[in-house]
Image (cartoon, rainbow, N blue to C red; front, top):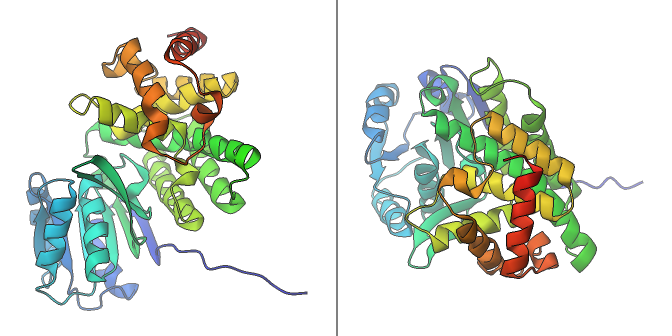
Length: 353
């Protein structure tokens, strides 16, 4: 009987623990990422200065670079600067903007990425996608999965609470995204990867069912582990499908329509997931999502993130245009603005907001 197998793209090592950055050079050497510490280390131009001061003594052979913002131009500029040196890998130390810029730049110069996350705002730590701003607004670019992921829980716990809570919303949205993927398989015949879906769903369920608060002893570690698993699910699927459905379409629409007022990505997709679940007729899931979001201080209504009902309805109506070809509950129901307004008001009453 033949044995069939497939290669799963994933990091060679994932380190999630207290004090991980203190051992960064040993981690790189032990896992053959860089035996001599000859790496390019990248931080943000602002708060990254303190991080560089903390880590640079631990990486004496590293060269240091900065990225100004999360734009394509900054990522391209970084890649051009990196060509002047000879490195084993590129370390991105910071939040999502830094890591996304590093993943993009690393692909241009053909070097592996080490993602050293300082907050847990979203699942881009280990995903095959970089989200960068360009002339069109905000775009997704395919990149390689990081070769290693390092999450120092001491550093993460120093981040503003909002950046930890946002990661909760991003993971909870997996439950809605996978349901949309299953819907598309039934309605359009789209290829569905059960392993990727199981990993993304499991990561979301772990957060949904955890009874603790953000600052409970093991919650931050679970959140970090789940974000990594969610990223690997996208590597397996070869797209963002396991974690991006109507929830993300709504968030992208809010970013496009109201660029100066959009909230954290995880905050928006968590709300979008609860509303999309209600549209699919999954009232129990919508209620559960809203309850957990609320418990962690995340938004469950448009008003919670500074949008009116009309603005949210406009975004939900526009949302399918942000991902042409991606089939979700929004494409299936194809509601007019007036029907979306009624559905949103029913959702708000359902969750008791």
